[in-house]
Length: 243
Length: 233
Image (tube, rainbow over all chains, first blue to last red):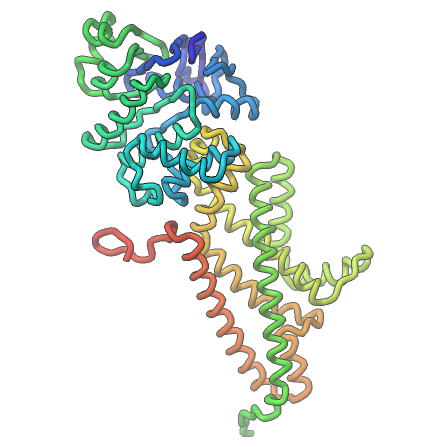
């Protein structure tokens, strides 16, 4: 039973069809990277997986939940599926610690010293133990993104989605976020990520998927795909070096 | 004809004036607290409930914002007893102020809520929060912080408008002033005192609310000045 199963998903924004029948499966513990040009549909696909975008047809199953737009079922799915965004999206009025504790408290009913200990634990995991009481405004972009990852981890998700999480960061800060993600991958987290970091996809992802014009154009084990791209589109994409 | 100011007949009435001030403060504080709660409820309904509830909220807000406060006060004070609901002038005044302020404050808070970036809502729902939880824990506080200065001036306006309650014989500051005027005939003198008193109360209320805002939203205070380095002073 794959952790993520996407079957023949179609999605249009008005008259523009951005996903033209996408199928993809991610095994438990696997890391799958989605690469492709802007507008190829990769972010939309990722956002369909946790129901932020509704797809018109097809079937998605994540962590044992069949995707359904019913509010309650969607919440159950989201308890098991974390997502990290390009622009961090931390809550500005809450400290790092409060950002992390909010959802476990409200959605899972956790509380007391146990909740605080757990928050400190996930913050330590991303290397920011000393920032528990800092507000997002006082953190660098890289630190904010690591807090955002910790906030997702605090829900103890079975699957993590990453939507171009380093695109807003300079190379140095990108590195510190990628290290955290690599640690997660090594610890066996199931990860589906949209990325422009080709080295990261090549070295960390088990499988890389190249999307082009709303379709999965080519996919395979990352080492093979980067070493010997088969389609001319992927060859052009990789050799352009501008992603 | 020469006019000389004569405050002497007014001094014996000082206790009545103080009581009027207290009632003005009480009415205003009550209306600000209850009106704010009503406003947040209206905005929550508009944000979370269905389309028809939203239209009802709009209708209420427009009704209160497009009719005179004096007429609203009369409708409550003279109209409700016909429906079997009896209340004192002070109670009617507090109710009218609450309903009026609730509508104006709702419109201000709604602007703050609408300025919330969509990414904040996405982060909230993605963490398995309900829509109500997103409103309460993610949206509301930054929204209130953004519109706090506008809310503050609305609260001060309401405090000043409490003087209209004197039309239904509520003995708040203006009501008391009218009584003293009829007893002493020192119109100008009494209204000099009343004007200065309102001025002091309004400035004090404004300062209090702005200080409260800084306490409630310590890390969300806006940029007050722009300097050459592009940062807040």
